[in-house]
Length: 71
Length: 415
Image 1 (cartoon, rainbow over the protein chains, first blue to last red):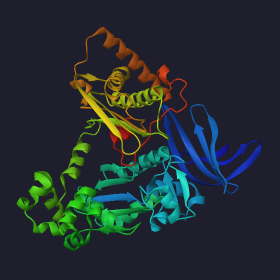
Image 2: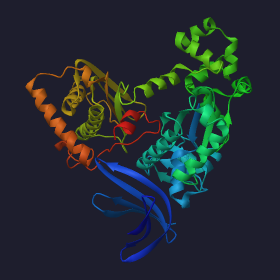
Image 3: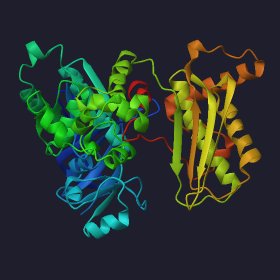
C-alpha cells in the first residue's frame, strides 16, 4: 500500500494485491472500526473500476483486503 | 431547536461507499438470505418498499432490487463522525437514533446563528463533506423537539423546513399521526376510530373526554401535541444529556432470530449463553448490576413463552445469570416448542456504587474471574475469551448496533 498524509489523514494512492498494482481512483468512505482495544480504519476505494474494502490496523501496520465488489 | 435526519441512512451510506448501488432500488437486510427489509434506499421507497416489507413482496415491487447486507460497524462509525460535527456547531447535542440528532442552538442562536435556515444548509454541506456527496439530510427547525422532528418528517428529502407560529396551526391540522413523534400505530388507530386523524382535531376534546379512552397520561400528552408542545418522552432527553456518563438505563436485553427453528437442547443453551455473555459484558461495562433476569422464546405459528425472576440481590456475573436462565428452562419450559427467536435480559439495573457487593468468598472469586475476562475482552473483543460451551460453536452471535440506538449510553460513551 502506498499513500500520502493529507492534513494528518492517510490517503491510499495505490496497492498491490496478488502481484498486481491497483491505482486508487477514489476513496468513497473511511470508517473507524474497533474490536476490543484494537482500532482499525477501513478504506472503501474505487480502483480499476471496482470497489475494494481495505482494512488497516495501525498497531500492527497490516493491510487486509476484506471485500471486493465487481460489477 | 434543530433536528437533523439523514435520509435513508443505512442504504444511503452504502450507496456512498459503493457507486454501483447509486440510483438503484436497494433493500438492506440484516444478513443475505433474511426476509425482512430493515431499510430501503430513496429509489426503493419511491417504488413502495419500506422498513418491514417482506423481501418477496419487495422483489415484486422492484424486480431489479439489490439486496445488500447491513454494515452496522460502518453506520456506527459514521454516526460518531456526525456527533463530532454537530458538537462543533453547538454544545447541546442529543443523539436520538443512529441517524437523527437534536441540536439545541437556543443559547447561541442570537450571536452565532441568526439565520437558522442558513445554518441548516451549512449543516447539510458539512455532512456531505464528512461522509460523502451522496449523503443528504433533512433539517427540521422548531421551537421545541416535537416541532423540529415534525418539520424534518414532513418536508421533502434533503430540505430545510421550519415550523413557526405562522404555519403551526395549519401543519397540525394537516399532518397525520404517523409523522408525529411518539404516536404509535395503536394510539393512531384508536384516535382514527374517534374520527381524529390530525393533532389539531384533539383540541376539540377536553381531558375529561379523552381520559376514559387514553388514560390520565396520554390524554394530557395528546393535548400537548395538539398545541405543538413538547411531550414527556422528548423532555426526558434533557435528563439523558444531563446524566451523560451516568446511564439512566433500566434494562439491557439482547435478542436474536436464528436462521431456522432450533431443535437441540444443547444448541438452545449455547444461544442463551452467548446472549447472556453479551448482556453481562454491556452491564459490567456501564458499571451496573441488575436483579431481574428474563427470558423469552418464540417459535413458529406465533408460539411464544416468557418468564422472569426478580431477586433481592444484584447480578453481574455471566455464570450467575445463565444459571437462572438455565434453571428456568429446565424447570418451567420443558421444550414446549422449537424456538427461532431468543431474548434474554437483565433488568432493574442500578449503578454499582449504589449496590452492596456480596461478601461470600465464592462471589468474590467469581468477580475476580469476571474482571479478568473483562480485561481480555476490552483488549481483544467480545468472545475472544469464552465458556467451553461456545468454544467450537460455529454460529457465534456477535454484538450489533440497532438503528434506534437503544443502547447509546454503551455504544457512544463506553467504546
